[in-house]
Amino acid sequence: MYKIKLFLFIVPLVISSRIDQDNSSFDSISSEPKSRFAMLDDVKILANGLLQLGHGLKDFVHKTKGQINDIFQKLNIFDQSFYDLSLQTNEIKEEEKELRRTTSKLQVKNEEVKNMSLELNSKLESLLEEKILLQHKVRYLEEQLTNLIQNQPEIQEHPEVTSLKTFVEQQDNSIKDLLQTVEEQYKQLNQQHSQIKEIENQLRRTGIQEPTENSLSSKSRAPRTTPPLQLNETKNTEQDGIPADCSAIYKRGERTSGIYTIKPSNSQAFDVYCEVKSGNPWTLIQHRIDGSQNFNETWENYRNGFGRLDGEFWLGLEKIYSIVKTSNYILQFELEDWKDNKHYIEYSFHLGNHETNYTLHLVEIAGNVPKSLPEHRDLTFSTWDHKAKGHSNCPEMYSGGWWWHDVCGENNLNGKYNKPRAKSKPEKRRGICWRSQNGRLYSIKSTKMLIHPVDSESFE
Image (cartoon, rainbow, N blue to C red):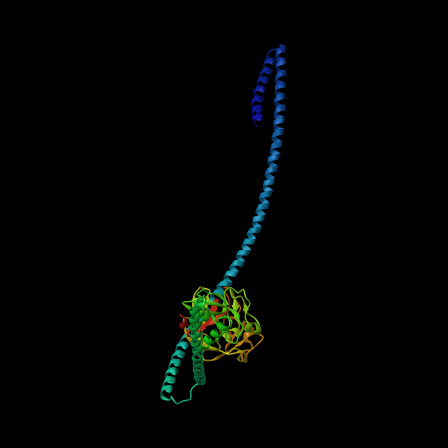
């Protein structure tokens, strides 16, 4: 552009000078040679200018073509981008329409849920009112029943009361027999003690020192447990040196919880886990902590026991029976839920032998959790391969062996170990659970079942 402008500026000057020279040539007839050479120089200059202008125009045309091509390419890219954006815009519009339709459907469903919630609230209020009415009726019936019992004491007693009285009478007779046995054993112990004293006197006379004097006297002065256990313990100690239960181990001076060997009366020796707490020795018969042991076992395994005493285990029905068959024991349940809340409940109990399917009879003593196991009733033990009469489906439906009663799934501490997830109530019932009589279902994380003699305090 600069060359074109220069050329346009120079050309008029050259032409005007050329015209002036021509006019002067017409006026003067004789022209000089120098003016001719000047004209040729001007033509050359003009030709060079035109040549340079042509080259400049050519370069300008090439550059312009390149710029136009770039512009066209950019326009094509812009058109393609605009087309893509239009497609995306159409898709967004379709999605927006779909979202609007979904939103309208959700609004309709939300209205339906609100209506259902209102209906449920109204039904719940009506149920609460019915519950209050039923409670009033139950209280009224209880008062009427109390008045009837007070006014007519001669009416025939309930079968459960009769069976309980019979059971208490049998226990009283057993206690009387045991007391007689204790008296006889006490006489034998006195005789043995006197014999030991005579031996000690003889040793002193001969001048021989007895190094085991203290141990012998400690054995002969063993503190007494419940009478039958004292009899078995003394007999086992004298013959095999194996205590009859954890109470006998505790009275020997062992104050540490751990695994020990015991040998109850008329039984083989076996290992148990003795737990010492609050100054009392307890025998651990069941422990669940992490689900590492499968508790859906056979009848034979529940009879003989399974698992590890330092982890999860079931001691065995026959072993439990061999410990408690000759004395009165307390059964304690220790429960811990998934919120780390700890509960316990204690029962006095009686356990039958294998001929009765190890029937359990309970009477509550104390506890801080609402009771779930029925009292004053015979609860029979069942497994999936050994079903007690009347409870044929309970072990298969809810897993594990347990003392079932009329309703399956109310409580089962030997069920499947469920981790703490959101589960339905039927799934919780198939696991370790404890349902109280007020209807609350406790999902359990860890359990312990422990026993110890009723008069274990006499060991202190």
